[in-house]
Length: 416
Image (cartoon, rainbow, N blue to C red; front, side, top):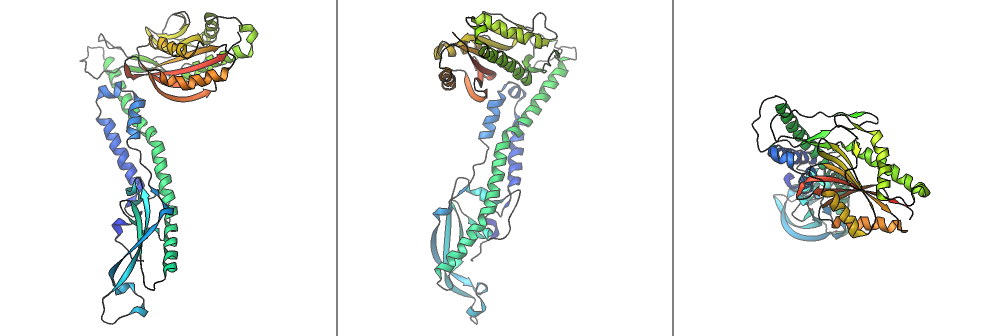
């Protein structure tokens, strides 16, 4: 084999995890350099998706089946010749060089790095050179034996595969974990800013207000039959009012209770036959209210402020709302979402649209929800399905994409 300089060899520049660290450090610095106001007000999901999508590594693809060859002549030093080729007094001999090229697409430069986990020695893969659109290797044609040269190439090409597969595994792991790792950095900085503002507010003296003021705090999770403990910052300056939010685990617990009641509607159709929206709403309320207490709020924890809605409030803030409606078609469904959004002004609000379906073909209604929800102007993204009849989405508050709403759509099949 006609060998190349080390700097261009495949897997020869350094370990891929060194590049991973460099990217993550750069993104950490990006998050740390954002203004306080930006960190506290930006939609975290949208911001982290932006950082992730723009910094994930594209995986290089080696097209083994598209190999091609070429040749050229060069003066070969005598060190490449065996003793039977010795020529007294001759330093170099001109010979044909056979080149093999394996095309590579996408991020070719990553093939310069060795795997972070396991690096396989042997097999000859290290004698391939990384080019702009291919990897290549060369053999000196000593004996005009084409099959022998091709056999040597095939052996070298096989030697690439193990290291290449390990490299791809490393890149895929980096890509899949990047968002969660960046979320940790983002959350740490945001929480530090929130804690700083909370401390400043507790000093009991007027504060110099900056453009970057904290606007959000989290309501701790409620326990069954236990009070929700709220640690609210002491604020002395008028206009400084942190926005309460419902803990994610609490939200999931509320939705599960609603789902349990809805399933009960389906299991006992004769009991609920002919019931209207408000009657069905009240059955849900009777399950929710005994299970949660909001210690510093007066009256019922869950209450009905409109004809068909259920609200959980903290002071004057709505931190959870559910709207109960009978399915009247796609237009009515999207209108119900709009109606619910009109109630909401705070960031990180959580909500549910509870649809009662009397139509016979329940599966077709579920399909309409799947296909039509994204048509709403406030739609951000689909998250997942908790159950066949329970869809989870991300929406934004009217007029501000950074104020995100977590919206569950829960549907239940009832008799006419």
